[in-house]
Image 1 (cartoon, rainbow, N blue to C red):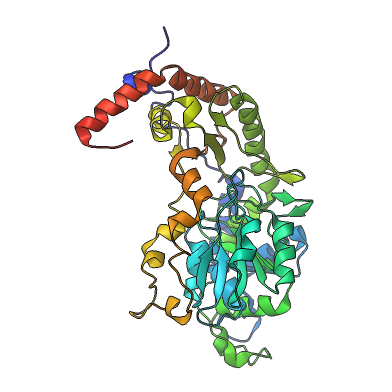
Image 2 (cartoon, rainbow, N blue to C red):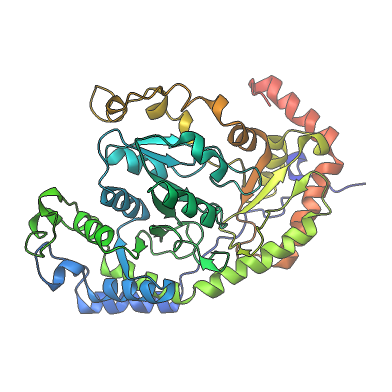
Length: 439
């Protein structure tokens, strides 16, 4: 007789939940202690002086990024969202200009375009890698298109070289949102280095974590200047610094603290090891999952390195015999941190459905005469809809302190669910009738 699943009253695999992932250790604590002892928690001053560029830890972090990724410029920010905002600001978009973005990403990949008065236009995703489908670009580009934001999702790269070639042919700026794929590679190049700007994230969920924070890298001096001025009240200093477009410069406070930079420096030094721990577990899981009917592990492009920000599985209801959401609820009951789908596709958000972001007149959508009905209809994104609604399962089941034995247990629990699929379906359908939930 098969062991009972937790949903039937058996003891869960992890009675108090999957162990927490925590990469903060003694080196990070020592780095913060040194900043506190120095007493300078931020080195930034909004004046035309050396302090305009921040404190010693901020500048050391930027130097480390420049060396690691072989780029001329690196700028720290208080978040990756701020870095994306600055990158799009640096493009000098006019109100109503268009920025192409994948819809399957964290909301900031698109709302940062809205923040600079541009209109996000979404491109459907790839079926196997979940990134922006470069073959969709040409049908979306108009005379108002100025930039493409490419998201390297779940730890894997988009088709970066193909997208860069296309952007160059159309004189478009390519920005890589590389928040989820630090040190991933594509055809021998680091993610974040193929586009005109690459953005990295340090918030608490990321491989390099510092609480919050981010870095933008570029080889373009003009883009770097504009991002630096937006970060630190640039309208007050651009003319003194001799910036050629000083009259067309503004700024905010998007500055990183010394403590965040100190922690990020330590974590950056550990990045190879932090990634390798996930890669080892993910590759082991991908081998084992081949024996689970109806589940398949993440695909990896030829000549690319996946760094597994999360482990993304495809689910085939026709093979498993129960809906994906039932399957995920069974795993969650065992204590695994898994979820059905990713984020709600961005075109479903009310800001796009109602086409109003700022003020009461529909700005910035009102600055563009494009017919938006097709731009934001779910019907225009069949792959994204299918993946989100019924196919994708993601989880941090490849995070330490889990080990290969935990991966074996995960596979066992998946097989138990499959073997008891009829009983699982009956259980959930009975619950649905009582609580008016639909599957």
